[in-house]
Picture 1: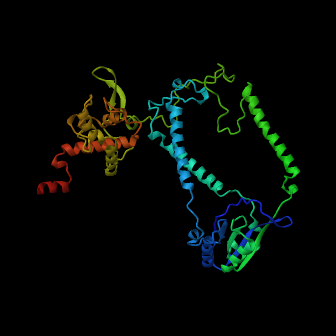
Picture 2: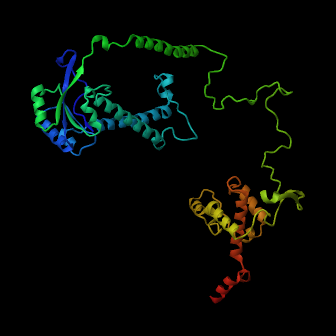
Length: 442
C-alpha cells in the first residue's frame, strides 16, 4: 500500500557527492501499528512531502497521513455531464436540424434530416442509448486521465528502487519516506527525528545525476525514429494521391466479408448465355424445395371444383380433418393454447365474439365490425376445411394468420373451435357417463 502525499517530480537539490543528489530519508518500522503511529507524529511535526509504504492496506493510515478527499469525482461528474450534453447535441444536430436552416454551416458539417418510417426527427427516448454510452465514455476517460495527471504519472523511475532494503516493501517491510524537498527537511535533524519514532533503520535515498551526454537519445535510436517517421508518411501520401485522382481499378479491399463474390449480378451482360444476359427467366414449372404442398386437404382445407349453381370454378371444402393430424385430447389442448394467443383477443376465450379487443373497439367506434360468435349455427354448419381456410386467408376485416401459425397449429385451432361448438349445443346424451351422472344429481 502506498498513500501518496508527495509529488514524484522533484526539483534539483544540492549534491551530497560527486554526481549524486540526496532525494530523502527512508525509515523502516517493525509492524503496521508502529508505522501508523509514526505517520501521525510525522504529520504533527509539520512535514508535507512524505509518504508511507506497506505491503497491504492498514486501517486508519489515511487519517494518520492526512490524505484529503480528491476532487476527481467532481471533475468526473462534470465530464459525464459534458458527455450527456454532447450526445444530445450530436443526435439533434445530425438528424433533427434541417440543413436549410443553417446555410452558413459547411455542407460536410450539416445534419442529415432523414425521415425514417414516419418517425419523429427528434425523440428523447430513442436517444437514451447514445446518451448513456457517451456519458460513460467521457466519465471513464476523465477518471483515467485525471488520475494520471493528479499523480504526475507516468513516472518511470524512482530513487527508492536503488535501496536494497526497500525491495521488501511488497513482502513484510513498512516504511516512511521523507522527501528532501520538504521545507522542514534538514538532514541531521530529520534523521534523528525518524530514529526517535522507533525506526529500525534510517537510510539516505540518493540518485545519480546523469551527465549531459547520458541525457541525450542514442544516435541509432534517433536515426531509427526518423526512418520510421518517413515510412509512416508513405501511406498518407498514397491516400492523398487517391483522393485527388480517379482510377478504373477497384479500391483495396482487405476484408472481403463476401462483398465481392463470384456470381452473376442482376441486369448485367454475360457471354455465357445465348441472349447475353446474366439474369435468367424462371424455369417453367419449377418450385422451391419444400413449397410443393400437393396435399390440398392439409395445406389448404379445400380443393378446386365447380359450383353447380354457376358452373364456375369454386373451392370445395373438406368435411374431415386430414390424416396427418391426430385429433385427440392433447391436440385439442394445443389448439386451445393457440386459440387463446391469436383468436381470443377478438373472439373471446369462449368463442362468443366478446374479446377485450372487440369490446374496446366497439366502444371507440370508427367502423369496427363485431367479431363473429364461433358457436352460432352458421359456423357450426361450416366444414372444417372452411374454418381452416378462414384462419389461413382471413375474411372481411379479420386478417390472415397463415404466415404466423403453422398448418398443424391451424388444424389444432379448428379442432378446439369444434370442441367449443359442441360444448355450446351438446345434448345430455352426448356427454360421457360421468358428466351425465353429475347433471342428473343436480
